[in-house]
Image 1 (cartoon, rainbow, N blue to C red):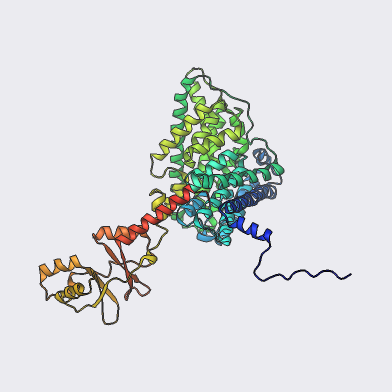
Image 2: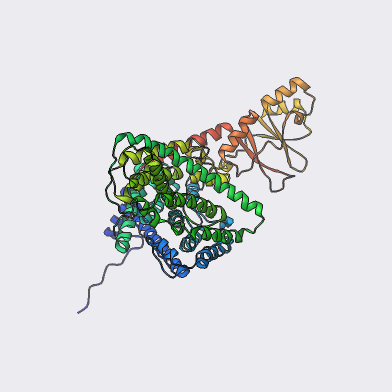
Length: 600
């Protein structure tokens, strides 16, 4: 039997189902849903990448020491011969030194670079640096570097997010939100702290709290945690027995511990900077510095194996009060020195792992000294936990995130007031200094400052090239003041640009300058004698902030824009005016506010 023919498909006509889907995707709700799906994808991908990093660290532990464990790392090190304890970190440093030569900037990247990308680089990051950071961190931490894994994990997550945002051509506001998604997912999987991870991404990476970024970051974190729970389970990283504060008067001691934690953090930055200068003065090639530092770290670790690696084992023992007071003091001092040595020489790793290790030891030492008074005190583990909050808050510059991380790491909420007090005081004392956190200190070492605020940082990413106008009078350098004043009046121009016979830019003048010059020197004097010379000019790549500052310094309302491809023969492109710059300033900030308080 002959089948009935189907009606021909008319070109360009869509089926009703296809049209409905298209309308949904093009609607505001559809765009939100699509972005949430993208955030979930980021969460899953970053969760898997962080798990791979964790497993790679264990793999390199096994390669270096013949066994692998996060929570029994010190026991493994203690059972190895002295030559292995010294040579394995040295060998790791040598590999890292060589690998460093092939990375952007010849250095390893971390959280500070993600902060810079968010504030100054339109949420764009090179993927190569993320891959390099991950591999380097696995080698570094697996072979004994006394650093943390959260920095490389966040950088990897942010790199994946930035790459995907760039491939999809997403605008700045969505790229920024995705960067926060990647960072939060990485922290959540690294420490099993989903709530703290969300707040960390908002507090440190993105820099503000709005629903537009909060919702997708929560979704990404949720997916990342599902990935973690499937492979690693749900247990807290530092399971401890519930604690309680013995007396409220101890809040004074906890505040003092916060001050002490900030001082130790500041001292760590100073010593790391001192070691960096020492490495530069040594004349040693950059690639061999991590190897020498690794050998020195291994020597220090011979009697104190707990200082190697991330330090989870030593931190847990301190939180449980299972370490001798003298050993706690030595571990604090040794970890302090080797962390500064590792950071200054070029080892790859984060700062939060060392921060909670040193904080727990600092709390233990503080408790031991306070107990000499004979006053009734809480247990040593209470002070170790609160010390973690003090050091973490000071170094991260993120007290809210630190408080939440401490609670989620330990599941101990009985000492809430103590943790909050120490974190708040430590952060306040740290903020009173020049940099305010370890990450901002790192950026300052590269002459990058975020202290000017997000608005200024955002404006510095916008160039003047779109604002160039041609509303000016172009004249030769031999024109007289009277002639130029007459021509400016006839052509109703307030700005004149001087060029020589070859068309090379030689200077500029506005009407008020020209009139002042005429009064002082007469109408027959050369007009160019009253002009601003060719140094008063910018290129099209100059940002809005720099242009406005230049105008303010010279008390002018305009600025010539030139092409300096040939420095001795600058080519005039046009001028920008103060009114146009201020209008663009307003539009940029207005769009930023709309993006922050919008949904997607």
